[in-house]
Image 1 (cartoon, helix red, strand yellow):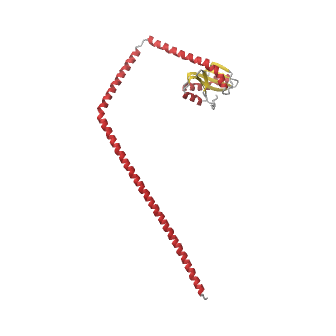
Image 2 (cartoon, rainbow, N blue to C red; image 1 turned 45 degrees about the vertical axis):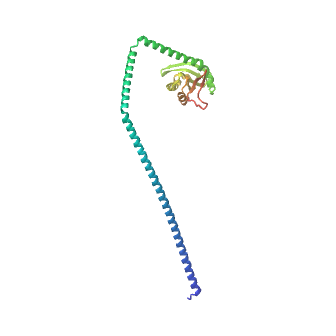
Image 3 (cartoon, helix red, strand yellow; image 1 turned 30 degrees about the vertical axis):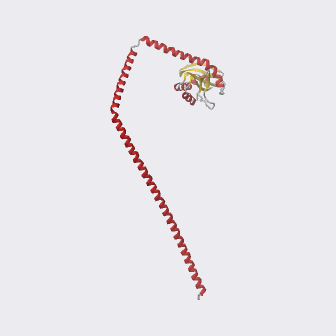
Length: 273
C-alpha cells in the first residue's frame, strides 16, 4: 500500500494537534494547581495572622490578669494593714457589745420577773379589756354582715348572671357525718352560694371555707341537686389573699367605702361543688 505525501503531512498535523492539546491540558492543570497553591498559601497566611491576633489578645488578657492580680494583692495588703491598725478598736467595740448584751439580758430578766409578780387583778383587768375588744370586733363583723353584705348579695350576684332571690343567715347543720356553720346562704331555684364573712380574711379562712364547701351537700341534702358555688366576704382585703381565693374559684366580696363590691373580674370562672 502506497502512502502519499498528503497523507504523511496529515498524520504529522494530527500528531502535532494531539501534542498541542496534551500540552494545553498540562498547562491548564499546572495553572489550576498553581492557583490552588496560591489560595492555600493565602489561607495559611490568614490563619497565621489570626493566630498572631489571638496570641496578641491572649498576651493582653494575661497582662490585664496580672494587673488585676497585682491590684487585688495591693487591696488585700491594705485590708490587712487596716485590720492590724484597728484591731484594738474592734476588740473594744466587741467588748462594749458584749456588755450591752449582758445589760439587755438583765433588763429582760427584770421585766420577766416584774411580769410574773403582776397581781391576779391586773391579769383579769387585761383579759377584760381584751374581751371587750373582741366583742367590739365581733359586733362590727355582725354589723358588716347585716348592714352591708345581706342587702347587697342579691344584686351583686344578679349582676353576674345568677338570679338569686333568697338570703339565709347563720345556717347550721349537724348530722352524724359532721357539722357546719355557714354565715350566709344565697339561693335561687337552681343555685346556692355559701358565703363566709370575716373582718379580715386570711389564707387559712379561705382553706377552711373550701373544706366547708365540700361538706355542704352531704350535711344539707336539701341543696344536693342545686349548683353549689362559694364566696368569701371581708371588711379588709389583702391583695394576696384575694388572689388566692380567686384562683380557688371563690367569689371575693369586699367593703369599698360605704358599699360592697365583687372583686372578681368578668373573666372569672367559678368553681362548682
